[in-house]
Image (cartoon, rainbow, N blue to C red; front, side, top):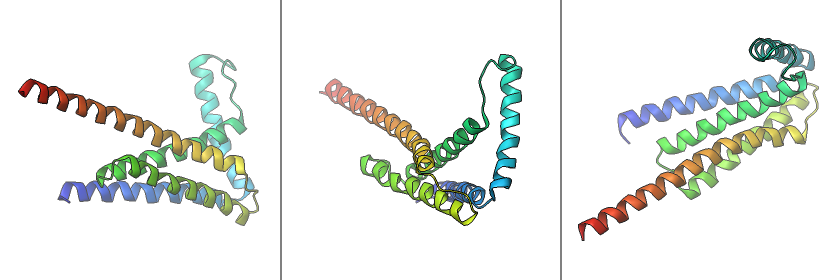
Length: 163
């Protein structure tokens, strides 16, 4: 592995660690702390949507913002894991299958940690988390398939042109 690739792998791995630390640290917050944090995000989102689209045109709820936050955090984590596998040159069909358990593990631990902070774990939150992660992996996999098909088509064309 060349130096640039090693640096890229290190940076992406560090981003993954920071993202997981952020996700899990939020799960360790008390119900009051968690509600205060998400309340600030809700107020910001509400203010932006009211400014851009007009007051109360886009229905924004505190609950909805919390669920989108779960989805978004895991979408980011999925992107990071896909980039790591690409940097490690493990980008193939099996590589994408191997990425999946990482997201499910982080999501399950995330919900389990909430029990330590006197908050309830919810299976639906694991599904929301994992769906964000799965969305990122699916998009990268589709791009991988398109790139592979394009390369194959170019190779076949160059072979037929050379004959």
